Amino acid sequence: MGVSQFSASTYMPQSPLKFHNPQPKRIITITHKRFNFVRATVDGSSAPGLYSATQFELTKENVDMVLEDVRPYLISDGGNVDVISVEDGVVSLQLQG
Image (cartoon, rainbow, N blue to C red; front, top):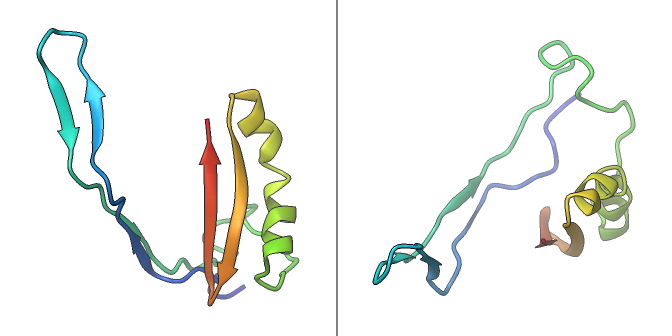
């Protein structure tokens, strides 16, 4: 195998997240949360059974096709995922639920 097609990037939401604590007069605020995505390597000898012999071009249609395998599990848990875009090796997804 080789290196996957994911690019390194960072995601930081623009607005703070607020969580209500059941105890009165306590609101917990998270001002920003940082997610780092790094380039992953796939080596068949280090992860047997966790890779596919089929390689796809990184397009919106192909990402959507691959996600079809996990959608039933997401839907059964009250969620879903939509592919928003694939640009310059960066996949943008909208998670629901």
